[in-house]
Image (spheres, helix red, strand yellow):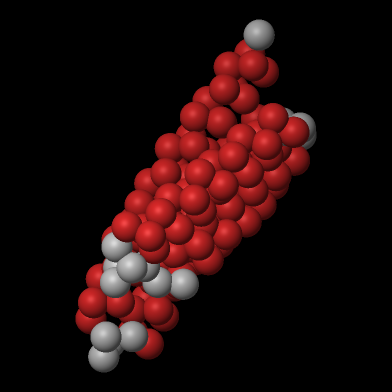
Length: 127
């Protein structure tokens, strides 16, 4: 579990540095929500992994139920965050577009990270 959270922090730091690199390379594209999105995805991914590990300690059926429930729940949470932000920033279409692009990049990065971590966990438990 420590290895996962250390890797999660490393991914968060890399994405935070990348978001600040955007500020130096293209200041017109940078928005304050970029590093905040990294924090949001880090917290959500960390909580989801923690609860998945707690369920995995019980039995396989509980793990599957909790994992699927958490996956659906976080997907709806992401949709709510996206919808609220986009509807509150209808007047500034460029900012909304930048938010959507940054959100999609963060979602894909953290989805791949979490999937790889869970695959490694399942392989480790089988051995």
